[in-house]
Amino acid sequence: ARSIGMERLATGHYARILPGADGYELHTAVHTAKDQSYYLFELDQEQLAASSFPLGELSKAQAREEARRAGLVVAEKGESMELCFVAGGVGEFVAAQAAERPAEFGRPPTEGARVVDSGGSELGTGEPYYRYTVGQRRGLGVATGRRLYVLDVSSRENLGVVGDSDEVRSDGLAAGECHWIGPAPDGPIEATVKIRARHTGVACRVHPGPERTLEVEFTEPQAGVAPGQAAVFYRGSRVLGGAWIERAL
View 1: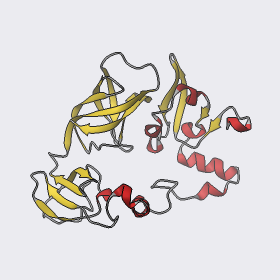
View 2 (view 1 turned 180 degrees about the horizontal axis):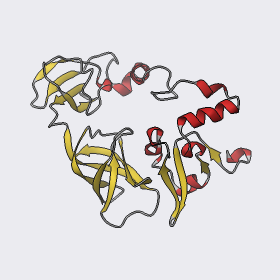
View 3 (view 1 turned 60 degrees about the vertical axis):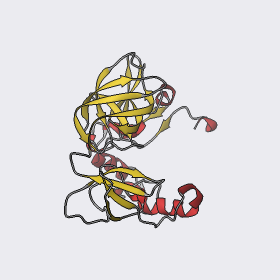
């Protein structure tokens, strides 16, 4: 944008930028059902100062009506429920990437993973490992007659570990590469944390550590703490920051 003389960049994210005592603040959208602030927690003050989110105050219906009035061809476009820049499903996209770079993935992209329970007992061969995520219940590819959840996934071993509902719940998490939109806290703080985009959030205590690490204590155990997902911290509608989950506690 700057290379063509523009000072600000407007995007279609459902989120809001508001002035605060310590600079710009990132807040949830007014239409919370479409809120996308979770994905934006790594934005810094320079980026927020040069960005605009004009849809943050609108509902989806209002945004469509604005598009109709402007004669935009996307006014009636269907909802995008997958990654908007990927043709087809995420699973198919990852399979294609794995097929193109076998040395990086280490095995054929169609090879089913070994599925074991938390005690190490073999339950069968399921889907390729990349089709599993921690907390998943459906589509495991093995039948045991009981409800099981994914507890862990190993790409190196092409392995999925499953267990019951009690085993999938965690008391907290450890995370790294944390980013604070405003000043970093100098000690533990109380907040609400979301451990995935559609998580309702849970009250927690955040303990900052050295070298951008932190640990989070949930007020009640949560299912599906998945390494590689973001843990994003809120205070009311304001996004404080977040970090990348490394393991459940």
